[in-house]
Image (cartoon, rainbow, N blue to C red; front, side):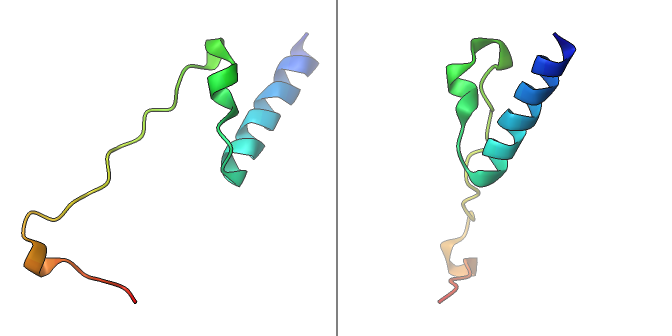
Length: 50
């Protein structure tokens, strides 16, 4: 049982690093709460990378 849990944990973390959110299929992991994107208060101070 511990082997399967460890393998599942490693799999979920690896998929997260690759950009796939597999936590949505596993109810007991919960959802990952992400912070909203930061928006500068003064748009004149915004840096635009080209």
